Length: 254
Image (cartoon, rainbow, N blue to C red; front, side):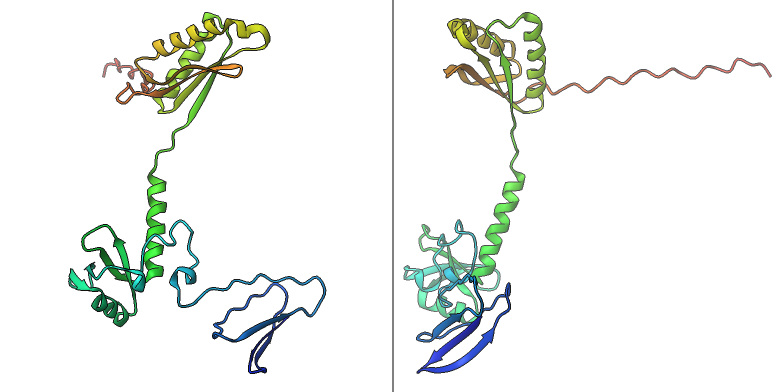
């Protein structure tokens, strides 16, 4: 593949790239970039950005792009600058932009609704990196809640009911949510009132462990109730250690 730029019909630069390689460069406005395939079935991925627009230059997640105004995008006449390397106070926007330029950094608006808006002088790529890192840390701290499902039949007997009730208590003690449902197969849908009574009994037997998030509701062939653990519910009791036998006394006489 031949990469060529032209100026007034003159070739300025040429490079041949082997397959699988990459190339990057800054091209001035008005120049022409020509890509030529030297073989069959060649393909190329081209990514172009405006080097003067930092929102394009930094290839950061879209969720972070455009959330903050920077430099000339800031419309306020004056801003309050915070940070360690500058005196925190209100500056005219022209002076703030000049300070950022002298520090070879960017003026980033972090609190647009404040009066006046609050800004930091920081390299914008570093600022976005810090935001992304903070988001990852917050996500890692989030507690993951599991939902355990328990299935009943409309004619569930007491033995099966108590077995599943015991499991539900264990799930709730572990901090998991419980989604219990009665599955109606075929003509058993005629016993939907009986299924509702069973789920209400289930919730009542778990009142010390759970609160009801959703009362019994029929969805297709399933009647569902959803429970979540109560705060301050009794934690799971640790296993009682087995008593160990005391060593026998030595009754031998000297």
